[in-house]
Amino acid sequence: MKTQQEKPKVDNHFLIVAAEVDFVDRVYPTEKACFSEIWRRIRPNKRCQFCGSARLKLKFGNRIGNCGRCGKKFRLTAGTIFRKMRMARPYLVAIRLCERGIPCSARLLSRVCNIAYASALHIFNMIWGAVLKAMRNDGVLVSSFEFNAAICKRSLETPAQKHPVNEQEHAQEVNSESAVNLEEEFAARISVFKPELNLVTESIASADDAASTPVAPCPERQIYGLLSSEPRSIDDLVALSRLEAKVVIATVSILELTDLATLVSGNRVVLSADRLRAQQPQVDSQTQAHVGQFVWFIKKFFHGVSRRYIQIYLAAYWCFIDRIRWAKGAVFEQCCKTAGVDLKTFVSPLNLQFCFA
Image (cartoon, rainbow, N blue to C red; front, side):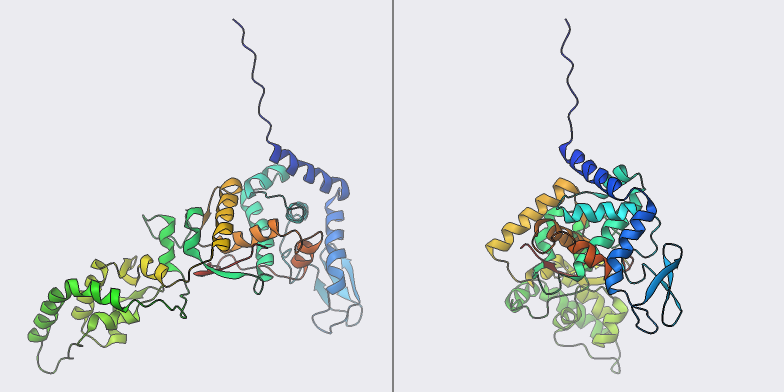
């Protein structure tokens, strides 16, 4: 018995992206036309870096020109996200998609533009990095712990043999203005292991001679006060606390047993993820709802992100949903006056800038 053959499913999102690519190909059919469009956008704000003159002319190819006043050469794409680019067409396609509010992953851009995945990812990161420069004063601070549901990819900052969420322990900033009082909970946790710690410190004090450094009355509180989200080695704790190495090691063990601290790679100590989360301010219901929409957005189009670059994807989310701020031509203008971000050293802070309107 013959069965009716099923028709292949059509990806509507892919067709929308492909239509925008066809539009760019019709308007800018050659690479020279793409460079001309970039020069037309950069030209109004471009000045000579030596004399400040606006009399600039392109004479030495598509990227190098000279100043009509001092005669020195300048580079067309210097100081913009287009520096060191090899092909202009993928950049115009990516900017077109951002301005139209059409989400597109680097994998999809590599397919429609016939470029490498790494190149497509670099293009999007540079564009979203330029958008990130514009959200310094427009967003609210939200703890990165609120976005744990979207973090599922590893990066160079992820601890070995740990889930990507554990990268929170390596965050570079801690909210120093937190109003959360942890003294009572700290005392309750330490009191459980206080007898064992006293035995250790007393044995160390009796084993040392009289000229040795005296043991602090509360070494666990002293060591805990030196910890933060930045990993510290045992030697650093010994130098800062001026305690015996044996006392520091014993105190760190007690703090680890009480989940107040965590040992990371390189025998370094940081505050535990629970401590960092407790220091972050609570968000309101409206912000929590937008966080849920962002998580859905990331899983739908990007299948998850890493903790290190989540701030860049928050900028991408703002670019796609805020059609008033990022209307036609706004993304291109921002890219022409911004150099983007240095992806090699970029690490998302503990408190993230989040724009949702």
